[in-house]
Amino acid sequence: MFVNTKCAFCEQMFDYDSSSDDPTAECPHCGKSNTVELLGDTAAPVLTVQHGAPTLAGVKECPVCKSQIERDAVLCIHCGTNLATGQKAKGSSWLAAHGRLVGLISGALVVGAIALGFVLWPKQEDAPPVYTTPASTGEQLASIAT
Ligand SMILES: [Zn+2]
Ligand SMILES: [Zn+2]
Image (cartoon, rainbow, N blue to C red; front, side, top):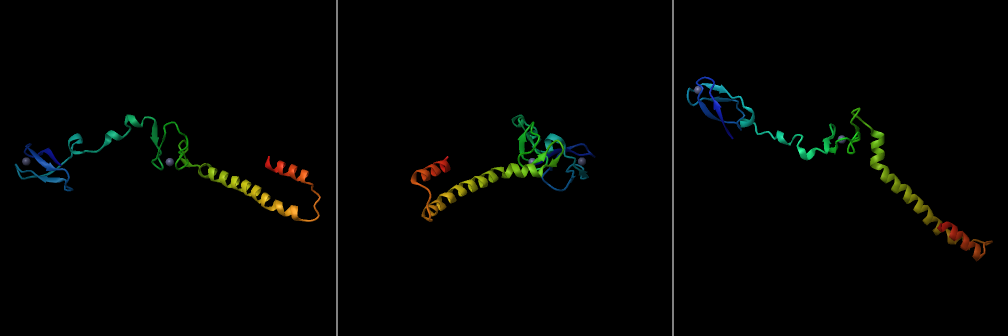
């Protein structure tokens, strides 16, 4: 991208390639070397418009993980950082991340225990002596089912 630059020596305008890494440019009019100062809106196509754009009004950026979180959020849901203290709440974030898993595991254990009870149940019927009557067995099955 070429930028119209004014020579500091002869004050004539000339084009300078702003994509060049060399900040010096030789004036084609007087031949002197200029240190080109890239001026704001003509030379620096930096996308500053995106910063704090209206579409992001409802969210803010987590200072730690750069994730977008709710503007009034106190705790980052992505990395667990407490935005008031700036410290990571490791314990609570772990629980938040794994609480569902813990629930699933404990739920699976309960289901497994019930299933194990049903698997073992017929063996108790076969074991002598059998004191239970068909009626009481039915009651016990009913109590397990509830
Ligand atoms: Zn010049
Ligand atoms: Zn975060």
